[in-house]
Amino acid sequence: MTAKLSSAPPKPARPQELTLDGKQPCDLLSRQDWPRFFIEKGGKLSHTDVLNAEQCLYNTNVGGFGFILSVAHGINYWTQADTAEKIYYTDPVEGFPALERPESWDQGRCDIIVDVADGQFLLATASTLPDAESKLPPKCVVARQLAEIAINALVNAITPTG
Image (cartoon, rainbow, N blue to C red; front, side, top):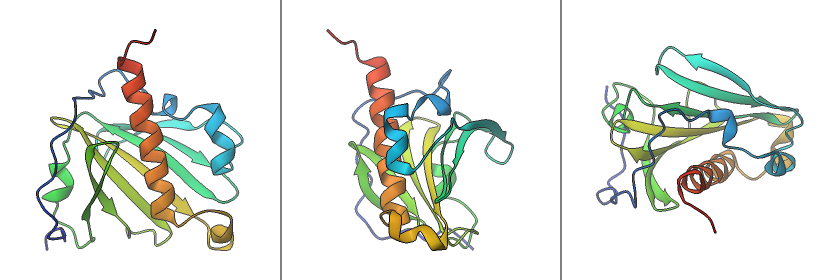
């Protein structure tokens, strides 16, 4: 089986390269954004062997949220994946090409995968608990919000201010 990609037009070009080398996924969400996602404590940093990438996960009483920063695989990892999961091109995130994975092994989860640089991607994930769905927007809206925050943090980290 192959990934199910929508018949959307070709992905747009990235507005710039946002290399993830040396970046930490737990640095992407500022404390100011925590209340928006019901986060009360810092994320847990770990390594995912499947993607050979660093991840940061925030567990809350409404669900789990997080980021994966892959410097070992590009977005083609998802577009050419041998999977039965549905993966769609979606609207760009802050101008960067993006995919949406609305259903994974976890029915309450949605991932937004952003093409940030050659051979690299950012994955923002939102997994909401069934009894908390009324407290948050739909899971894919939350995942997109997280992706937007992360992309802005990465852009601001390389853009001089002043």
